[in-house]
Image (tube, rainbow, N blue to C red; front, side, top):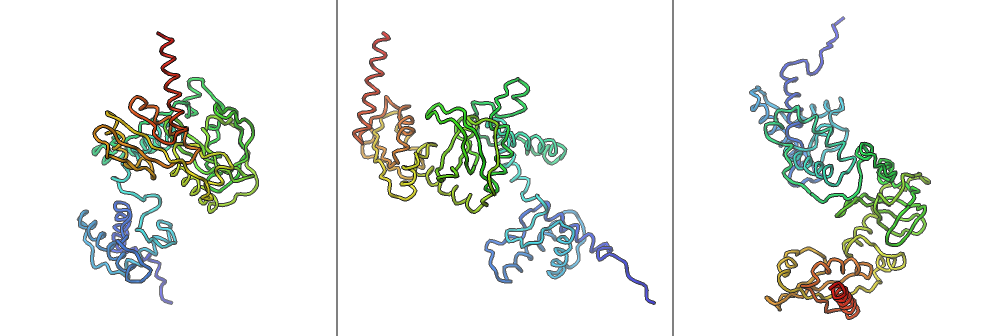
Length: 386
């Protein structure tokens, strides 16, 4: 009887080195094999493989390894092998190949690390703190990172949280607040699958809303001074946002998950409200329903700004999607025109107030009267103080 050939297909040295070079290519050049335009035809797929082929030759030359002719059919066979051993997933890589979670280059990793570092240091995101600390330990062992300062914070976002968010920090200084930060993992899980939850709001300095809420959590948002939770009420679909620390550490899952499609749909509606409004308040239920339906009448506001804040106002070219800046009065003044839903007027006014001695409300008359009354009260207050 003829002897059975038990040799592995890659027992040949050249075949083995070729496979290792392909793996090295995907590690050091994640995303390779992504042509500028990807189509569904075979020509696009062939061009994708040609770019991988060329990069493998380049890597071989870099490491001074002799690579004989590497045909496209052979490359396809090697890709099948990587899928067989779980190094590549069994799917189509339309936007380039990468191994496991290695989806970015070292340069892109630096940008991601900067963002994580900022969230950990200033926004005090517990999850970001944990992930950054783990990555820092792992990457410190790589000479390439130490020699090229990949951990140097080139970019940062220094908006600082004014409340305690890190559970370890609370424990160390005995400042345990027993709020929803203790349950963020459950909240994030609920967000990802569209799971309704019951939570308890124990404080709200503006509306005094206190009690149990049954909601679909949609997103965690950092804004200005704190982390907020965007959610949708289960019973009426009303969208609302509230600071995370204003909820207790009580959470309970409700019913079956509704899935990510409905989550994304609600999130899109909420983001559209953010875009058209000013600030975080999304409106009361009746007003919000009209706004979403497109039947709500917006308020046309005109503010006249004087030196020296003119330059600052003009710099904000994308401050709001509806803004129009009339510069015909320069250099004496500019007129800032904006269309806002009624829900956003209070937050917009707080923004204008910081320029109070260099700003004059022209329209509408009701808002003009409001600012005038505030100015008179302020003047009277200081007159009494004298």
